[in-house]
Image 1: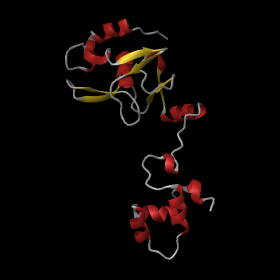
Image 2 (image 1 turned 30 degrees about the vertical axis):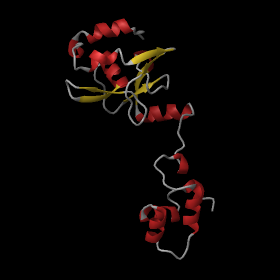
Image 3 (image 1 turned 90 degrees about the horizontal axis):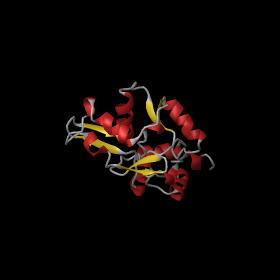
Image 4 (image 1 turned 90 degrees about the vertical axis):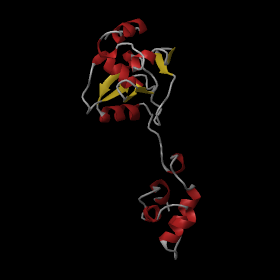
Length: 175
């Protein structure tokens, strides 16, 4: 596998579809990362998942930064595949750290390396309840679910899911 240098990428950017002209992604790309150890770490905007993110104003397209660099080097790829990082750094744009894989392969790699995020209950940043409140709801009797939902600021559907053991299973299965 070829080891890429910044100089080689600049040369690649100055040819073909990614000519370095104002308003294109390529124009600002090399000011957008810093070299840290072996990674080229994106230091501009990121999306909600922590991946580098950029916008090509000329072509009116959004890109994840590692996808941009992968396509620059390798061209288009099968949309059923994902671009994975050997370094496990979502902000890395070093082309030597990028490879194609299936979603299943990427998920298996993440699990093998112990990077699965536990998003149960209070570890999920979308949650509105504490563990204690879920236990209270699960054990609550004699109240309409819509009233419980109003009391806790959640939907009746969530109350039902808790009571049926479909949501917050990590707590309700122990009760």
